Image (cartoon, rainbow, N blue to C red; front, side, top):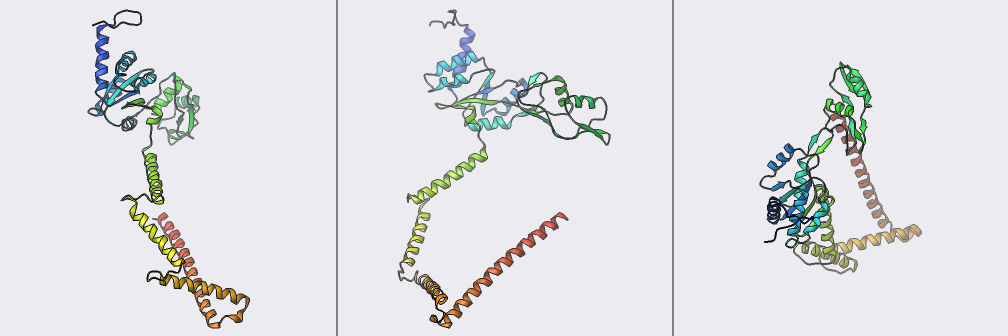
Length: 339
C-alpha cells in the first residue's frame, strides 16, 4: 500500500493517518455531522456539554486539517459532503448525532451560560449597566464607577446607579477598568456556549442562519399554512376525509340559499320564503306610503310601526346592556386595585 504524501512530497505521519481514519469512521456512522464554533469556550464548559449530550451526540475537537482530510475521504459516499469545508474556519468542534439538527441547535442554545467580559477584548454586544442599588458602600469605588461613565448617588449607606447606562458598544474594546467595574458589580454580559456554524444532514448542508429557528414563530407559520391549505382544498373541492364535512356543509348552505332566492316551495324553505316575501312586501308598502299615504291600508302601517318600535326597543336594550357591562368591568377593575 502506497504511503500518503504531504504537499511537500513527504510521507504523512502514521498517527495522522490513523486519526483521519478514526474521524472518517465516526462521521460515516452518524446521520448528522455538525460543526460548532468553540472560540472562547473553556475546557470545563465543553466537558459539561459533553456530559449533557451523552447518549444523544458526540463532541470531538480535532485539527481542522484532519477534519477536512476525513471529509475528502467521505465525499464519494456522502453526497454534497465537501460543502462543509467552507464552514471550517477558526477553532471548531465536530458534533456527531442522529437527532434532527434543528433540535440539536435548540439544545445548544438552551445550554448557553453567562460569562464576564475579559479586559482588552472586543465586545460582540452592547453592554448596559442597569440603574439600581449596587450594594457597595461609599468610598473610592465611586470614582471607579464615574471613570467608566456611570452616574451615581449615595442613599441609605450604599451606592446607587441613577439610570441605565451603556458603557460599551458592540465592536468596541473593553478596557481593564471597565472589565474590573463590571466584575465588581457582578455583571456577566456575555452568553457563552456552542453555536452551530453548519450541519450536514443526509445530503443537505444547512447554514447557521437557517439552523436558527423560533419554535413559537415556526408553530404559528405551520398553523397558518394549515388553515390556508384547508381553505384552498375546500374551494377546490378536493374530496378527502378532512374536507368532506366542510364541503358538504358549504354545498348545503349554498343550495339552501339558492332554493330560497328561487322561491322553490319545499318544506325546508317555505318558512324562509314566506318571511322574505313578507319583508319585501312590507318594504314595498312603506315605499309607496312615503309617496301616497292613502294608498296603503292603515292596518298595514300600524303593523309596520309596531315592528319598527320593537326593533328600536331591542336595539336600545342592547346598547343599555353594553353600557351596564362596561360599568361593571370598570367597578371590578377599581375593586381589584383596593384588594
